[in-house]
Length: 347
Image (cartoon, rainbow, N blue to C red):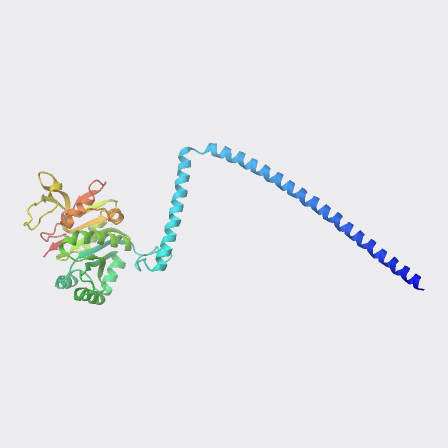
């Protein structure tokens, strides 16, 4: 009994061991077959990939031979421009997040309404502290206020603003008076980075053009003194006749003596730069003149290196020497006397 039971147990144990060996053998065979299959596929893939690379190199080589040196340079230039554009877009996005982008600056995302009225001109009336009576007289005479000012922009494409800097004592009563006046009329460009001073007027004009071209996309940008009265309809009509000139400098062109005596009203500290005859180059009178968009952009881009002289009109004229600029001597911009069809009159 005992030996028979032991024999049965041994027999059962042997059968289990044999079955286990068979299973292991089958698994080993299947694994080997899978390995061979995978290796074969990898070899075929590698062979196909090698063939594709050779074919691509062959075709690319043929294409490269067909591309001229000029085309290659153009392709490189396009890639560089695309890279720069991407960098600028990233910088603009960062600046917008940090709050450094002007609220008035129109972006593609904010301004898909391409059907809006085109701006013909941005007119900056250069003013200063203590000239509120002049500004009020202009508002009554020719510069619209309130809803009428907005209507002028929307219907006739003309933006008009007073232009002023800040007091040397930032935040004093002078600054507060201008802020209060602007809250009432909303018709100022306040140049926070510009200090109000007589000797700073040329720099203020330069900063006005920079600010205007960065905030409004117009065909022309005009500078006017705050003691000049304007026929705004005549101004718009005259500027429209020069839309075909991409680099126009329009005004009452003049020249004149350069005064080297420090006691003279029109003293020019840089008089020695104008030669032995001491005569100014041709430039537009500072009472009113207009420049096209391309010239305003030129000023904006090069503002840090553009030299200013004692007078803003001479300074503006100097910026365009050496450029391919159309100087337009427009008699209607001469403000010494008012006549039919005149644009301006000095008071």
